[in-house]
Length: 307
Image 1 (cartoon, rainbow, N blue to C red):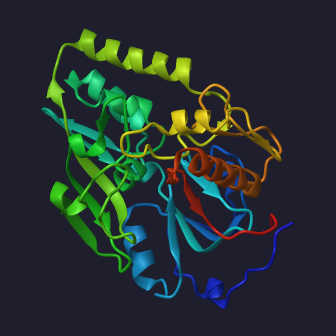
Image 2 (cartoon, rainbow, N blue to C red):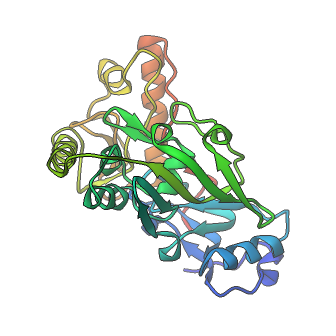
Image 3 (tube, rainbow, N blue to C red):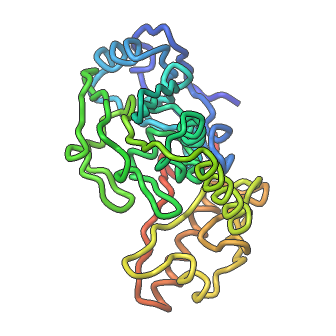
């Protein structure tokens, strides 16, 4: 059942050309398929619509940006403020010579495929990264020996006041699973460096990445990608395995038996089940190895019963 808006600012939300939904379910927008509602969910029509909305939105209203929810856990109590999700207007991909410009809403896989079609190597790893370019920038996503900082030339973003910002690679200040740009910047696009290469070799590398994922990771299940970042000099999955957590179940959530750095929704999990399971894994790994695992999955919202 839909609940009443919790804050009076809902009534004063700016007029938009995009889609603005009050008390919007978020669980279905994530790979885990769990979580509560957003107080308001905004899907901007284009960059101008987003800029105008941010400029007029009261400064005290919290803004949270989500992509396709591949690396996201929405807590059961929902997300306060406005959640922004960039759609098709932000998913364009353009290629000029060996430079690829991709919108923040473009799927990483589609960027890799577009580069392949143009005979550009160096971006194949993106085919093994679930999610969108915006999320890949925000966490300096990587897989199969490469990461975003290796291929990013620049990015554009929009700040909380609705002003567009051009960011160099130095401005992004990327390191392992980290981007140092201000947290309230919403990425709009990235300019990526490819390199001309043999079509057959590019296609083979992408095929190898696809096969490696299918062989080693749970697919076609309700999961959220890698749960914890690899600590310096160690692999998270090995630490989890040595701590005896492979297959561990809590409520409706389970540590994957195929790859134990993945958590699964077995079908009736709550966000709390998944997060509590993750915290239990962290506790056991700390007890057995002395290493504290850092969450790689982004957790947003407040704890509590589902709306």
